[in-house]
Image (cartoon, rainbow, N blue to C red; front, side, top):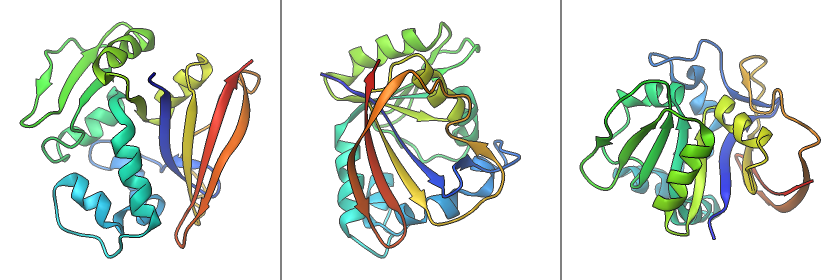
Amino acid sequence: MSKIIFDSGISLDGFFAGDNRGPKNPMGGVSGQIRSWMFNQKAFWEYLGFEGGKEDSADGKYIRETIARTGAFIMGKRMFEEGEASWPNDLYKTAVFVLTHEIREPWVQEGSTTFYFVNDGIESALHQARQSAKGKDIRIQGGANTIQQFLNAGLIDEFLIHIAPVFLGSGIRLFDGIDKDQYELQIAEVIPSESTTHLRYKLIKK
């Protein structure tokens, strides 16, 4: 059965993205600081369809496992708008459900990525993603506000955090406004590496 998950990098002081985030400044310009562990891995560039990366370590194995378990994505309009102009074709290789008030026909890319635009909320997006995922997991891709909505609705089963050894000082925090009484959290796995710390949590709804 599908799990509802998210998999996100944050800074050591808890920021998911930097200031002044927008289509001309994706992730507030901090992606290289938070996600450098990914960019070093051959698995990441293989997923994009490019050659690159200096390493094929346990971090790469982790990337491949996360890709393999994901059957559909959900994201917010803001994240979609940041990536629409620059993402390579067929980046997600599955269905992506975009939460938006904009009425728009599906964007069918070459390959297996199709973006569907959902106008009636997170429950509708989740229902459609479940049908598309065919038993694989549904990944809430972001941004932070979208992840917060799913957390506060009690819909997340598991999440994975990659803590980069960097202080940003300001930006968008991943866990702002979270209902702290929604879940019991269990640490399921801790995986250290040279450039990040991977943490896996299981969530049990109270």
